Structure formats: C-alpha cells, structure tokens
Image (cartoon, rainbow, N blue to C red; front, side, top):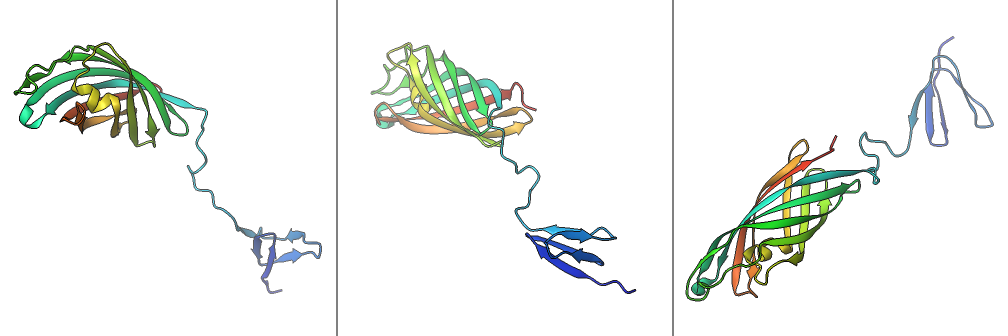
Length: 206
C-alpha cells in the first residue's frame, strides 16, 4: 500500500507523518515512523535566560589620578596626584555599589598671579561608588562622603564630586584603562583635567 501524508494541526502543534491517525477527540495517535514535530511559540536562545539576581561578584582595585588645573590668565596648577583604593560589589542584575579611600601622593605646583599661593591641605578622602556593569563595560559615579582638609584640591573636582568614569573589561577578571576627565573647578573659575589610571580585578569571577 502506498504511503500517504496527513497533516494534523492542533493546539499550535503541526505533526507531519507518512502514516498518522487523528482521533475525533483531538488525540494524536502516531504510527511508524515517529512523526516530526514543529512547535510554534517563543524560541529559546542559549544564554538568553534571565540573570541570577542573587549572585554577586567582588571587584577590588586602584585608581591613580594626576590632575592639572587651568585658570586662564590667573595661572595654572600641575601635578597633583592621588591614589585611591576601592571595593565594589557587582550584583547579578548588573548594579554596582561600593566605597573607597583616596590618599594624596603629591600636591599641585601652582604658578601665576592668581593661583601661586594655592595649595591643598587635604591628605585623605572617603567616597561611595554606584553604577552599572553589563559584562563588558563599567559605568561608575563617585561621591565624596568625607575629606580631612579644608582645601581639597583639584582631585576633588576631577572625580569625587559626582565624577563619572567609564572603562572596559581588559581580560578575564580584569578591567580598567586610562580615562581623561575635565570638569569646572573652584566655582567655575578654572578647569580641572585629570588622567585616571584604573586597575580592577575580580576576586571570584568564574
């Protein structure tokens, strides 16, 4: 007997078989050979399942910042250096939070009629960090919570007063780069430009 093909469409399932029986009650009774099924619906793409929002990764590292100040005709300040250490928690949903401590390495050298007497008496700052990580790039915002001096220096303007850094993953469990940031300083009377060298490592990334 010649084989024949019968098409049954029920509940979003198409079954195509050389020999098949479709009952009047909606039950599909396959015969030999085993039918091929094509199921309509949302396809699952490997790796597209929701992230585990309960797991966290821990990143630690440093930021070395060298800041110069341009005050136009009033003069300029150069070579102010700070080194920061920070600890970050990256949650499964990509949110980042953390904190850090910064210590001065070298004060700025200022010259010019309006800035020659400027100097920084702060030596340490504490700050919070918030942001996001998408698996390839960090976007972090920094906010100072305390500083030990009355004149915080250029670094405070270049990073700690709402400064934002963006940098990428450089390898498995590492991220960083050199980021240049320019922001107004001293109430808009000058511009603070800093080169931030970021070096982060993940303590427990798989």
